Structure formats: C-alpha cells, structure tokens
Amino acid sequence: MDNHINEFVNLVKNYNDLYSKIESEKRFFGKVELYPTQIHTLVYIKNNNQSTFTNIANDLKVTKGALTKTINKLLEKKLIEKYHPKNNKKSVLYFITPLGNAVCKKHDEFHKEFNWKISNETINFLIENEKVIKQLFQYINKEIDCLRNKVKKLKGM
Image (cartoon, rainbow, N blue to C red; front, top):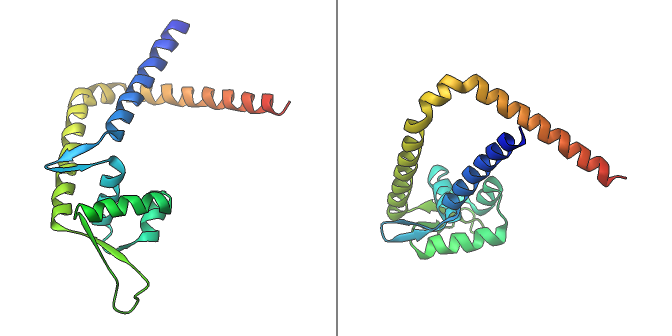
C-alpha cells in the first residue's frame, strides 16, 4: 500500500516540478526574451488598459521593488509605454505598445498549443474518471489537512 502511495506522490511531485520549470524559464517571443514575471505583467497591462503602478502591484501580488525592475525591463524593451495624465502629473499610467501586443499574441499561442497538447492527451481519461479523481484529491487534501493540524499541535507542546 505504501508503495502505491509513494508512487502516486512522486508522480504529482514530478508534474509540479515540470510545470514549475516551464513557468520559471525564460521564453523567446521572436527576438524578445522575457521571464514569466515580465510576460505576466505585460499581459496584465494589455488586459487592463492604462494601468497604474499600484494596481499592477496589488493585482499581481508583487512587491513594488520587484515591479519596478519588471516595468523598467518592459519599458527598455519597448513593450510598454508610460504617460502622465494631463489632469494628474503625479500619476503614471502604463499601456501596451504594438510590439507588446505581438509578444502577448505569441504568448497566447504558446498557451493554446500547450493546453491543446495536454487536453488532447488527457481529456477522455479525465471525463471517464472525473468522479474518482475528484474523490481522490478530496481525500488526499483532507488527510494532508489532518497531518498539518497534528504538526501544529506538536509545535504547541
């Protein structure tokens, strides 16, 4: 029984590791090289036209220091531009450039291809086994939560 559980846990860990690697590696969009944080910020700005610095930081849940570096890289690569509204010189708004739009389009294509390959390989299996898979993960989550509570109680001793 333990062997089956260990095999399953290792499969889940391997999946998470592979997905994390994909999400953390630099990607090339034509001649433009971006880290995931940069592309996610760019996509946010595209989807939220005339975004403020504070809105971006809050919505993406990143520090202002990290966002400053990301914004500067996107400005340097001419993927976004900034401007001060006439009625408020203190405020800075960001908007996407045509090059930024092209990069976002390539990013969308990447996700569509990635998701298509995954879904074509697994959709029938998931449909046929949906109930069992949900029950499995509900059970695992419950057991993990119980273990976490036991660890918390041990810390309190």
